[in-house]
Length: 451
Image (cartoon, rainbow, N blue to C red):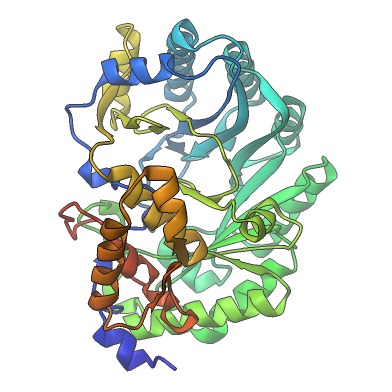
């Protein structure tokens, strides 16, 4: 049994590490990868294949203090309409070079708050996307839903456009905590939004909840989790709040002395985790839970779980194209990221060019290390035979990488002839263990706490 003091000695409570939704991580992207690379990698997509598409809507009616996403507040529709025109222009650029017959296996609208779009705006955006690449048979179309910014007309429009999955941010239902993080969203408002979604045949529902928030206690997070369970979400992301006011200035509104300490954070996570497991949810990776019937649960059981910038996924597409300011694309050749500022992104697109500002081209053993990290994050184990077969890596190289990681963690990992595994007691250290395979020098700034 690994004690909390042992976990602490191994760095759990005092080390900041990436979430490893990519490898290399976004701080390693550089300006040497630009629009030319983005264009070439799109043109190299196989004709008739399926890809995934992410559309970033960076606007919110209110800015939640806890959020570190690339967003901007607006009470007017004019900047939103102008941004949608830019998205349509970006889609037109994509259509010029996208090979014939490409369809969408996954479509996700994220933000920001996509549901601040009017029904007409939603129709226009959905139509512009369909004109470039239609949804494939059995495709998943998901939208991030703000219960405070949704109504029947907009839900009718999304359902008519083919939405199959909704993602609702909950964070916490406690009124004092909501006030402290600048996100007032009652249980009743959330419940009613879920009821409207279910009434329109939306069969799949995601929910996000946070631990490590100001004033959170074991009793309060248990109450919030139980309220969330009463809504019967199909999958839940239990994320740790990362307090980084030097990056997200709005977080300065949250009093640092109201935050739980690292050991309290672990206790909050364990309290919530046990409740989800007791209610019959499968544990998915380090921070997700899903019903056994959900796609994530099925993917975990068959070994098909993946990890991308939205977290855990069952999306098997090799290509993810990101549209909008700051959006990241993933290709077999590497990553590209659009200009972060809306004005810079708009200027480049309106000039007739993609706004790619930086990225990373895979080189050396990037793909090998990326797979090791993804396998550990998803399955808590990695098989030597897969690595030698898939990447042609010498057995000696893999053995050396595994031995180095095991040494970093005092020989506590499960190292065998078949591969490397993280024992259950050490799973809180998963991201730290993954970092031991990261060949790039990592800056601590902006990374999330290990727990």
